[in-house]
Length: 451
Ligand SMILES: C=C(O[C@H]1C=CC=C(C(=O)O)[C@@H]1O)C(=O)O
Ligand SMILES: [Mg+2]
Image (cartoon, protein in one colour):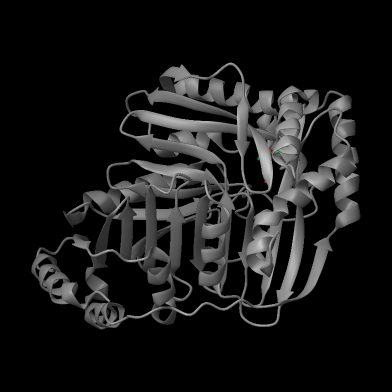
């Protein structure tokens, strides 16, 4: 489908690779290609080394195939954010760039101190990849960036050859669910009781507790099929997939953690939830109820206060609306307060991520105590669920979402995660129902049907 461009890219790369820089990054403009078809096309050669990202306004889509370079940290403290930043700067400084330059995509685990479950073994406390091939779609324009390090020059022609000869429509397959299991349901309900006790005794003010669903399937799950379903079914969401070896972390999150473009920063407070109505009238009534409900307003206020304070420490002109509005997704509506600010000199996107993660929408308040409580009483390993996932470019601009409404896919199985904010008067059974609504986007994409 892209044969026309093949020789151009190879010639350009041959030329610039003579310059002996550690990495060479060449970008060319392309004809329109469906990013999901590009992701699917990479299956044979790059299975286990692909990623997909599109932002909630569908302004930018990135698809990465292959690993030109991997940045990984097993660091269990906040140093992990700085380690990734340092290595990324070194790569960019040592690169020969023609065009937009390289970009890295990846994320962090929620809590590196939590005892790790086997199924998360391929997702360390931080990992980012610079893809060999990056497809960028921005509005109506498409580019292909090829990133090469000297060592892999030998395989490059073969890779370009096979990639550039991919053509035709991809086929998508849906695997059937053969088993569905709620993981530790009773322990989760007990954990919610425990949390409300801790809150009432004044130990902590808010804590977010997550649940897990386990699904097994008749065949290997087709990740391209799941991505396409999420893309179609969840407009206004960040759609992401990050493959690492045999597992793939995937989701459709409505929650932005931070976006940075030059000095301009955006973040959002999202907490407080109710389902969508069956009719417009019921939907509006539920929305009005949510805007006035004490428990939900408390859940939301912790997030606004914390984010406002964190942004004020490192930014100027922090703008926070005084009242939340509603953000309506396909299955759920949330209280939503968008925040804008201007980063002070020297403040990087990594320092913003480090400061913001986890907000009280995912951890609780106060932050350290909440994370420790989750570590102790939540009956699962969150892995990368509820943690930052996103991209950073060569200029230090980028965007991270909070990886909720997500699942970890193995070959024939999926672990789904959903959580809810517990405050003083939370009722365990309505919180349980709230998490059921939050499982819906991933369930619908995996199971098919109407939902
Ligand atoms: C933790 C999740 O949602 C958070 C984001 C929005 C609303 C939330 C709530 O109302 O509880 C949660 O704080 C999740 O979807 O797994
Ligand atoms: Mg809630």
